[in-house]
Length: 135
Image (cartoon, rainbow, N blue to C red; front, side, top):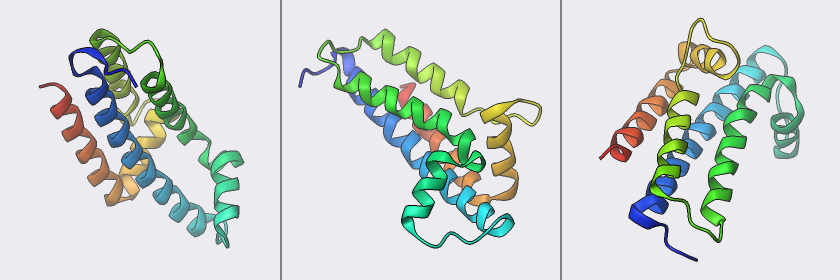
């Protein structure tokens, strides 16, 4: 494994880990909302199938795919530059910006924050991750 220059690997790893924690909180929140509004989830296999295939969870796939892209960047034989890491961090900031009037992920993220205090806490933790990456 080649170390990335100028702390790029560390920054991307911190970004990935923060986004992964946020993603897990969002999945839990959506699971709770699904069980409240649609039906009880009876097994881990059913939950996985819903998370992967059900339209209810589809909005989270954008975040899932972004995390995978960071993982793939970390696994490249040719290490990412600090500038490439900065671009990924900027894209992550834009992605996790909730918007009442937005569309897609940003709007659904806003809605999740309105209904679930745990998502608000997770968002705050992600903002602290971004603050640490800016140093």
